[in-house]
Length: 228
Image 1 (cartoon, one colour):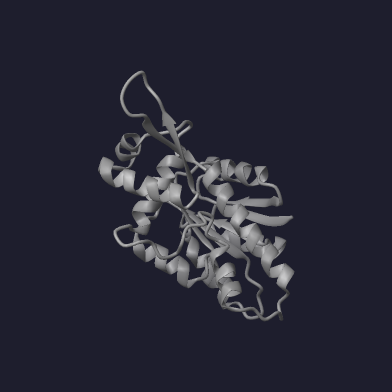
Image 2 (cartoon, rainbow, N blue to C red):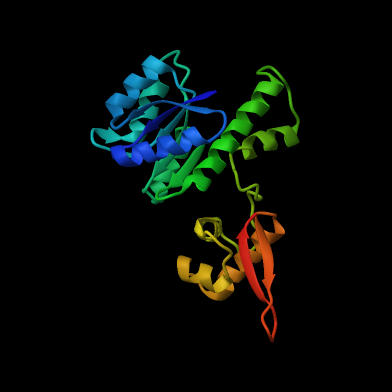
């Protein structure tokens, strides 16, 4: 079991996220914390494998937890997935520099978190199977680095596509309880219908979305999309 510490300043949100974690096979919630002080105390006491770490905490920034643990000599720091409403590039870069293995923007549902947890679990399994002293080729290195990207999409996108817009479109598609049209996704994300169509087509090509044709009484069939 992957012992997980859930950190969020809102105890209701913290409870929801903890419930999400408990639903994913192979994960165990060790404790919930609502401040940097509580998070640090829980890490030292429980030695979790993973922290779901909010950034906005009442007694500091969640990244202060990672900084403190990194600075402590001889400490085997747990991995961290940042869960936050912070969308600014500075926060994302700071999380990357401190070694966060994931960054999930609030609000999100169970599916989005489960994808990242399962990707993290896959990474741990690959590392355990290889062994700490094992050598690997470039393909093996690439596989390890890409394991924490649950989308399975290439890290370098084709010309004309951007990662932020792709993430926006995919998140909007994932939040629908039914299939959606390009117009639906355009309305949900604020991009044009043509742009939404282009990104949806790319997701289908990469196997991250499924295209379904809805036939009416006359005319061309309507293209509908859902997460694969």
